[in-house]
Amino acid sequence: MYDPEKGTRSLYDLHLHTCWSYDALATVTELFDGAAEAGVRYIAVTDHHVIDSVPEAKSVAAGHPDVAYIPAGELTVHCSIGAVDMVCLGFTDAAIDALADVWDVYHQWQCEYGASLCAGMQAAGFDYTDAHREELLASYRTPEALSIQGMTHVANKIQRAYFIERGFIDSDAEYGQVLSAAGQEVRRPSYPSTEFVLPRVKSQGALVIIAHPTRYFLEDNRERMDLLREELLLDGVECAHSGVPEHLTPVYRAYCEEHGLVSSGGTDLHWSEDVRDKIGTHIGPDEWWTEIAGRLPEGVIVNG
Image (cartoon, rainbow, N blue to C red; front, side, top):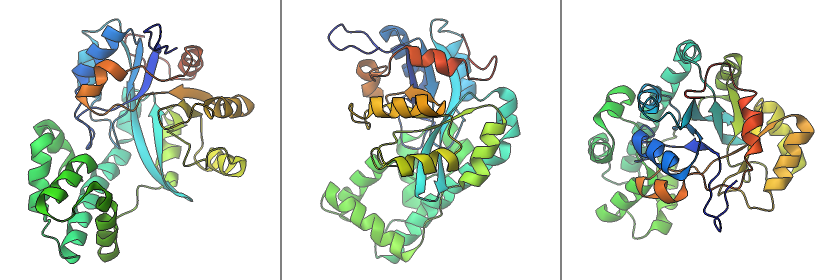
C-alpha cells in the first residue's frame, strides 16, 4: 500500500494512459520503467476507448520481467445517466479479436466526435477546421497512433491552449462555454451504448470496473450505486483514485464486499512528467490485487 512517509508504492496501478490515448503523452516504456523503479509489480495500460497499445506493451513487458502487465482499456459508454468511464481489465488475444467490432466503433466515434466539434466551432463563428485539428493532432500524437486511429478529437489540455492562442477565449475558465456553444450548433455523437459494449466485454471474461465513481455515484447515493451496478454489469469499483475522496474509499470498499465486487485502484496518469513521482500512489491496499487477479481470465497476465 502506498505510504508517502515510508516512500513505498502500491503493489499495483490499474489505471494508466499512454500516447495511444488521444489525450496522453506518457510512453509505454516510461510506464514500465517507472513501475520497475518504484517497485510497482502489476500495471494495466487503460488507454481511452482503444486497446491499440497492447502489441507494444507486450513487447516492452518482455524486457521488464519484474513488472506484470494486464491488457486493458478505459471504455466510456453511454447509459441512463449519460457518459460513464469504465476500466475494463483482462483482454486475452482471443478477446481482442472477438471484439473487433467494438474497437471499430470506438475508432469511428473518436473521428466523428472531433469532426463534429470542428463543425460546431465553425457554425458558432470560430475558424477551427478539420485542417487545424489535423495540425494539432500531428503536433503531439505519434504517427503510429494516427495511422490506426485516424483524426481523433484533440486533448482538452492542448485544445484549450490553442483556443487561447487563437483568441477564441481569453482564459481557461471560458473553455467549457465555447465548447457548449459549439455543441448547441452541431450536436456531438454520443459514446457507444452500454448495451453494445459491456455485454460483449463481459462475454470475453474481462472485468468491468467503474472508474473514479464519485460523480457517477453522487458520492454515496445508494439508489444511484445500485442502479449503475445493475445497468453497467459491474464486476468492481475503482475505490482508490485521486478523484475519490479518502473518506469515500472505505464506503465504496464496503459496498463491493456487500455485493461481491472487486475493489481497484489506479493513478490515472497521462503525462510523462508525472510517471516517476506518481505511479502507484493510490491508497488501495495490496490485498485488493489478490482478489482482482483471482477473477481475471487465465493466462491474461504477462509476466504474471
